[in-house]
Length: 101
Image 1: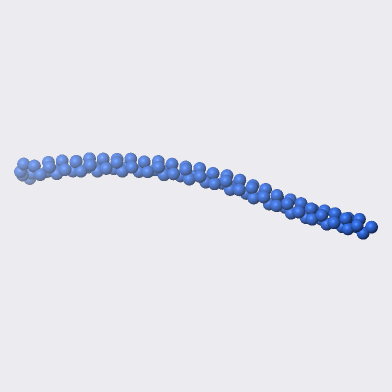
Image 2: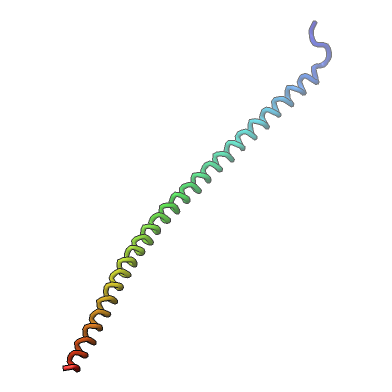
């Protein structure tokens, strides 16, 4: 047996399905574009983070070099202070010896 009636509802359903598919396809395209945009933004953020990590590493190297320089300067200052103390002590002893003579 064939279809009975005017087939209005079948035609309407077909149009509804086609419209729904077109809407879904356009939504899928929109979502894919949004995902691509988000991926691009994520790559930008990752690149910026990587650049900041590089800057931080450089700053740490500079800080470590400065610390090393400060430590060596501190050692030199200690040696100079001890040397000055010894020199002052020797001068005082020499003066005392000269006075005693």
